[in-house]
Length: 525
Image 1 (cartoon, rainbow, N blue to C red):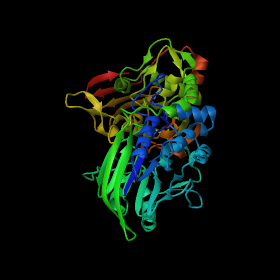
Image 2: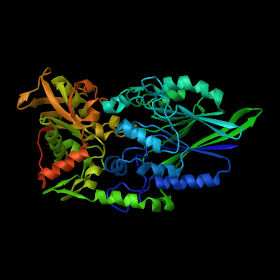
Image 3: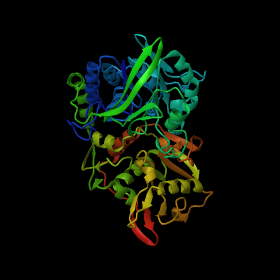
C-alpha cells in the first residue's frame, strides 16, 4: 500500500495569490493554489493521504491582521482552512502574536486537531490541543507527533505566554517516540522548527540556541519515519538517515509531499520505499470554488487596505534596501519618530524588515502601512547601560562584510540558512560610526548622546519593538526584566494615528550615523 503525506508550513495567512501590494494579483503562491494540488492528489491517489499543516497559520498577512484586529473573529479566516480539510495542524511561534485568548478561540473554530506536545501548562500537560494523533487506515496505524520551536519566550510578549513552559523538541520526542512506536506502524513528527546544522556535513549553520533542533531530531531520535519541518522558510526535500524530510518554504509557494510504500504481513509493517519532494504552486490555477466562496471577505480586506491614511510631501520611496541600511532613509526615520512620539523617548531603534518594503508615495493608504511594517509589533521602552547599547550596535554592525573588491555586502550570517534582514537595526537619537574594517565586535566608534560620549555605565532609555526588547534575534543584551514601560497598541495603528495627527508629512532624516571602511568613508547618513 502507499501512504502519501502532504505538508504545508508557514502559510502566514496568504490564502489568495497576492502579497497585497496591489489589488487583483495572481502571484505564484497562496493556499488556494495549494488546495488545487491537494484536491488533485486526493483524487489521484487510490490509497492513503494525510494532509498536515506545520504551523504559522494565524499571523503574517494583511488578511490575518484584518481578521484579528478589525473583525476579531478568527472563524472568518479559519473557515477557509476548514474547507481545505487538513487532517491535523501544529502550532507555530507566530500563533501567539495576537495573544493566548485569540489563539484559543482560533483553535476552537478548527475542524482538525491541533497537535503540540512540548508547550505545557502549569500542570505540566499540553497547553493546546493534543500531543499526538493516531490515524487508522484499515489495519495500518499512523502516528503524528506535533512539536514547536522552544524558543518562543525569546520573542513573544510575556502576557501572551504567561503560565506556559516550553520544552526542547528533542527532549519531548525522546519521551514520546518510543510510545508511538508501540502504538503505530508509521511515526511522523511535524515540527515547527528547522535545521541548526548542515544536513550533509553536520556543521552548525547558526548559533545553537535551541531555536531549531531538526538535525538533533534526525540524528538522535530513532524511530522517526517522516520529519515535517518549517519555521526557516527553506525549501528542502530529502531522505536523510533513512528519514524522509520536507520543508516547503512559506506562503504556499510549495507543498511538501512524502510518499511511503508499505508492506504489512502477519501484523508487522515494513516501509519498502520513501520519497520526499516539493510540488510548486507556480503553474497551478487557484481553486475557483474556494476563491468565489470567499471573494466577499477578500474584497472587504482590499477595500480596508485602500483607505487613505495620510499624505507625504516629498520622497519617501525605497529604491535600494541595502542603501537604506547603509545610509538611513526618511522612511526609517519616520518610524523612529512614531516610536519616539508614542513612548516619550529620545533614542529609538528599528529595522527595515524586508527587502520588499517600498516606502511611501505621495498618498499613503493602509495597504502601504501594512505591506511596509509587516509584523504585529508593539513597543517597549528598555532601560539599558551604555555597554548594552554598544553591544546591540556591534551586533547590528556585523550585518556588513567587506567583499573582495573592497565594497560592502551582507554578511552570510544574515542570509543563511534564513534571511534575517529584520535583525539589522538602525538607531536615532544617538550618533555613531560603524567601521567595517575593524573586527566584528569592535566596530562601533564615536558613540555619543547629546554631544557626549556614552560611557559603559550610563543609563539610557531606548524604544524598540517588543520582539527585540525580550532579546529576539539573539540580542541577549536586551531582556524582559529591562522593560520599564510598554505601549500595547499595534505599530500599524500608531503609524496611522501619527498620520492623523501630523499629515502631511515632510520627509527628513536625523543624519546621525555613518558607515566607513578603514579611513575612507563609504557612505554617510
